Length: 430
Image (tube, rainbow, N blue to C red; front, side, top):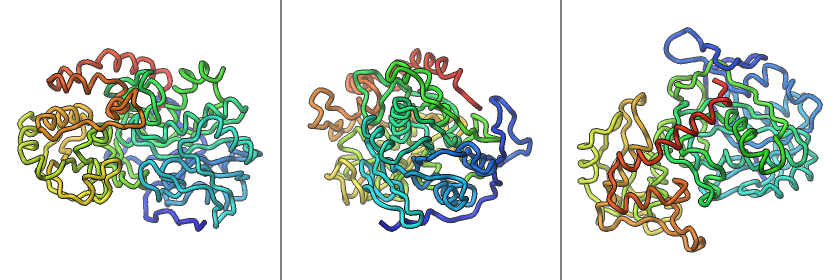
């Protein structure tokens, strides 16, 4: 199939350096925008030394670019220094053209001639089969995450790590900053509610980079699941600090998925992504502001929703009365191409904005409307409510149904969040 060229643009980011920054090392002293280097920048500057003599399988999508928007597969191929065995595409595909819950299929990359495998939703056994077919020695992961448990790329990483551990492959993560910073938040996943939007017990907003998550997964989950850790190597970023958001850096932004167009989307997504679990409300898919525009059919919802939210004086956010027509409905066909009424989430102070607390308030107020209905999936009769999979348990849903207010709902996960913050600490790099 024809290979699309990745997004083009300009950036002032310089190439990386050979040595990765040590944990806790200071960033640049210059105030304002930080000149951040990704793991890919560091790898390129080293002449791909980490991959010397290996047959490499690359797990990536359009976000795996350097400061000049050149994709890592192109860089590897053009360098002549890396033997690329295959590439693997996650949800939305290697080229990023598929919508939520979709993939692009398996085919041949026209530019490089390598096989691109469809790896969306692949089990450990499927990963093992693909690695064997491609004769991979080392697996390289380079995808921009957005910091939320239900964004599926981190579970692509986990499952492929487990397969690599079982088959004795090296696993290299080219790290990238978390665009919403290092703050953790939200409820913990519980074992009875794991799924493709949350395979393991981490909190909803994990506050880690993919490299840090890989270290956490390797120490916490893989030994029990596959009998031991994978041979893991993380190529660290340089000059990034945990409190930095995407807006604080000059890193290029490429859409990680069709409905994640900007860093502003990523900032709200750990919260408003919960509206995927509400059948009667759209999260604004197919608009210019997905996950920032939230609403239901105009006959069912109105301006009172925004007024009540603004009256709560939530930190760092205001709400604009909004009317819009979603052109992509996901699992909610009744809302497709219909006029919807609701709110636009306007973050006015990133430093104090809490996306999950904000979303809980939005759910509490939306629950007042008679048309409000949780999404139920007929294919999972034991766990029909999608919101339970997104939040990790039935707790949030049952508390809101029982009339609990925001402080009670958010306070319910305080202890488990504190425990997660302690557990992740040894695995942090920045």
